[in-house]
Amino acid sequence: MFEEWALRFLGVGNSHAVELGSSAAVLERGGRPTLLIDCGPDTLDRYRSHYGGSLPQAVFITHTHLDHIGGLENLFYRAWFDAERRGQIQLFVPVRLVEVLQRRVADYPGLLAEDGVNFWDCFRLTPISEGFWLGGRWFSVFPVRHHQFHSCYGIALEGLFLYTGDTRPIPEVINRFAARGEWIFHDCALNANPSHTGAEELTTNYGEDQIRRMTLYHYESALAGSALRGRGYRVAAAGERIILCHSDPCSSQDKDDALSA
Image (cartoon, rainbow, N blue to C red):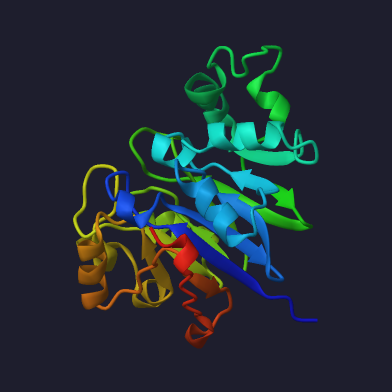
């Protein structure tokens, strides 16, 4: 029986492009949200606007820059005061990032005025190294090139998709984890910098088939997004839903006004 998988972009901008929303995406399975990838400052509101006010059941964190984790505090408060969700949200965090996340988010003193609550009491923390199981499927996790070594991680589901997280070009990773026709969701701005891929680097690092399967996100402005499209690249928009299958006509651009920045 065919079961539809899709990826919904909640936001597609970099840390400066607030009008595009913080880069985050939701993996949907059978029309239901299965995994939230990253949780920036505006991510949870966008998630709840689309999914009927609900909270995510599982979250994967690619790295600890605040435009990707700044919404975890909001998620903590909403979950803690929801008896059904308290302690039930599974938080998948690469093991090397757990200590950093502890310092950036969880160490905040006096989370509640009443005290007596730890940040992690609200979640089911699952430290991960090479991957994790969710819903009977294995998700591969791998380091990418962003700032320092082992500071950011991507995620892939064999046969369906690869999501890079924030990265410089990673041809060796793409060759390893997206060799079966998977969709490739790649960090790419119009102009390169020491932490992010630029459009001019795509053709020098990837083959034609890989570029054909790419959808770009985490760009610097709406104008930059238009310029990338003008160069012939597929570029994600906030609210866009992409059905994950192997043929290009399966792309569905479902632009939801409620998710628009």
